[in-house]
Amino acid sequence: MRITPQIRQATVADAGMLAQLAARTFYYAFADMNTPENMQAYMSKAFTVTQLTAELSDPLARFLIAEVDGVPSGYAKLLAGPPPACVTGAKPIELVRLYVDQKFQGSGIANDLMQASFDEARSLGHRAIYLGVWEHNHRAQSFYFRWNFRVIGNHIFQMGSDAQLDWLMEREL
Image (spheres, rainbow, N blue to C red):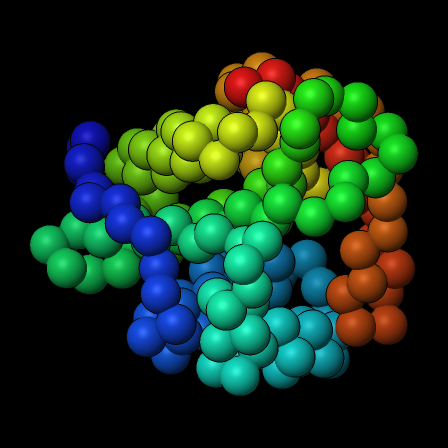
């Protein structure tokens, strides 16, 4: 069933809610493909209120929160930092994260967050967008291919003690 969320920019006041949402969605996406130890090692650093407060305070970062009837249903993070060498688009920005809560999967919220991310990136003057996606995350890869991203390279994502290969993907805006 198609659900149309309200999408807004997150603020530092959202750090606690975002830490919970980020941890829950990340766990759902990857727990069955990683050891509990590696999941815990990564999540205990990446999804704390302190960490999310710092990320929300970063002037180069933008978080978008999708809400359905006031309930957080997904989020995206954009980061305007230096891109990897394989990124060739003009004025690129990274889509660092895009996750939808399990109970809202298949409702269209991921598409709405992607479109909102494109709109936000354009409003900031960016003309290309890139991301990393785990080589074993076929569902996400399919989603990104539907949005016309193309593979341009790879890099290592450290998940606890496991060095995982991420594909780098890019598209023009």
